[in-house]
Amino acid sequence: MPATTTLADEILDLKRERRAILLAHHYQEPEIQDLADCVGDSLELARKARQFEGDAIAFCGVLFMAETAKVLNPGRIVVVPDPAASCSLVESCPVEPVRAYRREHPDHVIVSYINTSVDVKAESDILCTSRNAVQVVNSIPPEKTILFLPDRNLGSYVQRQTGRANMKIWQGTCIVHATFHARRVAEARAAHPDALVAAHPECPPEVLDQADFIGSTTAIIKYCVEAPAEEVIVLTESGVSHSLHKLAPHKRFYFVPNDNCNCSECHFMKLNTLEKLRDCLRTLTPRVEVPAETMKRALVPIERMLALG
Image 1 (cartoon, rainbow, N blue to C red):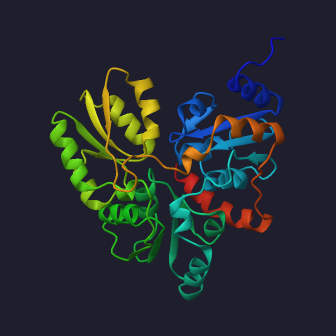
Image 2 (image 1 turned 120 degrees about the vertical axis):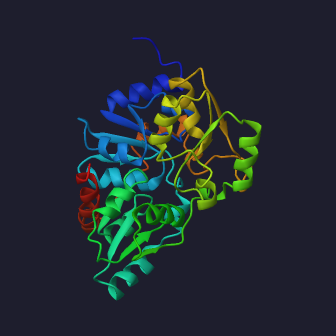
């Protein structure tokens, strides 16, 4: 048997030995995406997490995604390369204020974006992703007041799409999408007049107003590949460029820098590396552990979301 000569070879060998599946978000580094069994957005990865035979899940994304995978696979080991890979939306929405809201408004429906901690999910009635948020809100009886959390831009977009007046919106934001500026989009349009604009609904409303298409990460990729234009200005995390260039190598994609870091990268997503992935498969640590009662309660809103299709 030939000796392992590269990190990638070592990771693949460990994956086989551990009977593990490797899940990676589109925002991960290209070398991680290339090793993954599945590359997707939050909804795709949640579904994939429960559709495999094996013993372990190595989740390359951010921690809330791995927590969701653990809830869906309580009997399997779930590991992450770096547990510090958090999310600004998760951090903007601690569980105690949500519990307090639940106590004060027991008749309201709490719709939580999947970008929340497992503890917040356990306090929620149903989850959503950017792909199905409009569908989820439309599934709730119109007389019910909704608390939508935690992303204010996604919540604003959903409210405009549904016309839902009785919808309260948490004021969290994504450190990448919320800092795209309408001025930068206008400059990109002027520089590339033949390009279409595709934007994630976590972007501010004034940015979305300039978009030709608004959708989830996977929807943006599909749109960019299938759109008749040869150039697309892309307003989401630049990790999607790897998939875009693989699927449509003849097209040109322009990523607009945001006003936060003059880039369009999520520093949390970029904490994961091949070395950390190799080490977590080797030691099966750090493990994602969730208390049994929290898993039981969080599973209910997750299953409700998945049942909508």
